[in-house]
Image 1 (cartoon, one colour):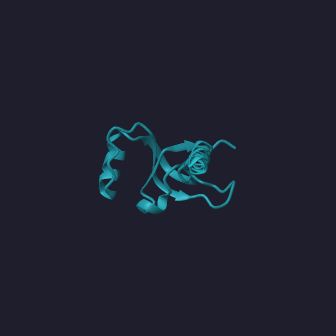
Image 2: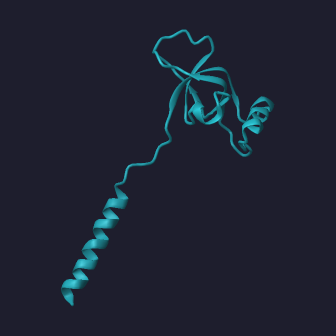
Length: 104
């Protein structure tokens, strides 16, 4: 009986240790060239988000509009170079979420 109890306790401790030291889950990011970056509360962002079925209400994050992926470092973007949490693939290059300027 004691061996079963110790096996259960050992198994619980191992599970707890594995859960405690698990790495945090992060959203995939991608480098983008956007024609503009605006706050998610702006009228332009709301209009584009409505077109693609996104609800940005309650968010206060920078949003890239008219974005395309940057595939070569140092290419001539002609817009704002940013890294975004939500890749452009999901919304047909119209909008990218949580865009932070790239500083080289």
